[in-house]
Image (cartoon, rainbow, N blue to C red; front, side):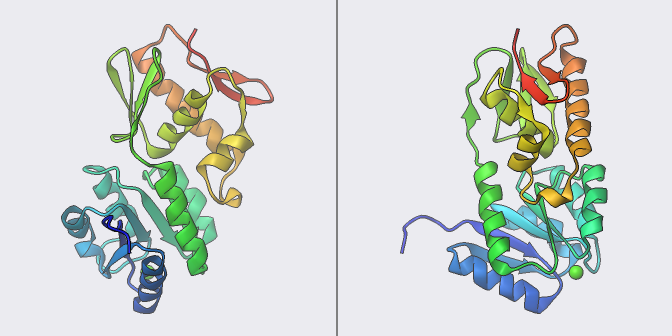
Length: 227
Ligand code: CA
């Protein structure tokens, strides 16, 4: 028995057997769990229980997972793993930029689900990264700043920036970026990375148009440099 409080995982899922199974596996892995089976109660439950992570089913009675994800993002950066019944749906969801941190497709093995939960928690762990001059990241709020001016980023944009900033000057290939951001490669294309980078650059440009921070290296990938 550890003396640390267990991290709470909120399971928003209307199939009772699946929800119970997910809960069992997570509890075996030393998480606390709470189940919400109706979309209408989901956002209130997130506010009340302040979970460490949310597993959010897409199709729910009352209110769908997409709307819930959007609503939660208005007040919280809690990691969200979206659960969908169709793999084709994932590309569409990514394009909508809901701010989910990962996606799992049904049917999934409970073990894989637990592994994803752990991976997302690791990836989104809080704490500030000191990066000196240039762009500053604040992992607690998913915000970045340039010269004191705040950049509002999506979770994916934040992760991309974090990876690039972790080793200034190093060129990361699109594949390496995908590897680090998405657990399951099959769900994203290289174009997805390009489109996120494009949006990220546009946001940076809106604050500091004089300096380029993210460079594309033709045919290879991207790098961060503070010149
Ligand atoms: Ca459902």
